[in-house]
Amino acid sequence: MIQPRIVTADEWLTARRELLVKEKALTRAQDAIAAERRQLPMVRVDTAYVFDTPAGPRTLAELFEGRSQLMVYHFMLGPDWTEGCTSCSFVADHIDGMLVHLAHRDVTMMVVSRAPLANIEAFKRRMEWRFPWVSSYGNGFNRDFHVSFTDDEASSGKAYYNFAAQPYALDEMPGVSVFLKNAAGEVFHTYSTFGRGGEALIGTYHCLDLVPKGRDEEGLAFTMSWLRHHDRYGADYVLDPQQPYVVPAKVKGGCCAVHDADL
Image 1 (cartoon, one colour):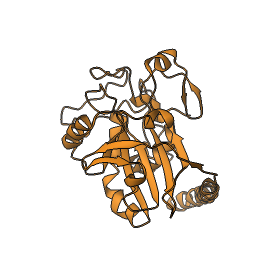
Image 2: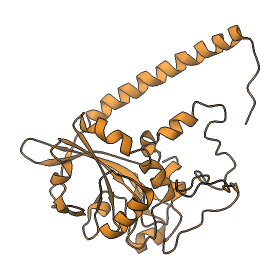
Image 3: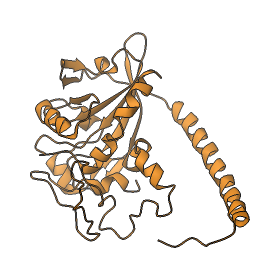
Image 4: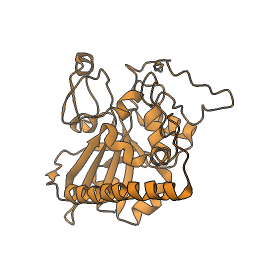
């Protein structure tokens, strides 16, 4: 960390006002991009996806739960993974508190993974989450929305991710997909984002951006290497900044570094 200069209160106020000008410009730019995002064309989803849920099989249209907008978080938990991705779990830690507010803006938030529902439910119980989480095991949803890949695609390092061939040898990747359902019950895909695009869901990162040390991730073996599943922090938690990612049993590659890749 570079230590900030020590100045008088008047000097601090001058510097803060100068930064405020830039912050306001950034806010206006973000608003403009959000408006442009809302005007993207959309594509009708004609595939009859059926998901396994705790309440039984549900179609994509039924996942809307009576609302017209659906946001899906693609959580990295593959069919043979023993636990969920640490970074996806970091994202998921922020979801429960948003659900009631999103619902009152006509938005249903849903988490989807390719693992069988029993595996999802077991990990969800361990992490004590409440958000709806369904399984796409047995359908092509994850592949069609470019977050799951075959062994050959993963091993080639050229899986199609974030709208281009990417050099990642993973069979699962994170992302967000957004859908709209019209009065006739037709479902449309309106937006997807990957990599750092998912940071909008991570309130902790936005808080860290406000404090003097920031995210404090420079010099780590990989971005987000400081993270643990929230039930694995403890008094004995010590970060080794050079320790590589430890792959969970049966997982075909480390997952966490891809979340903050500048894609």
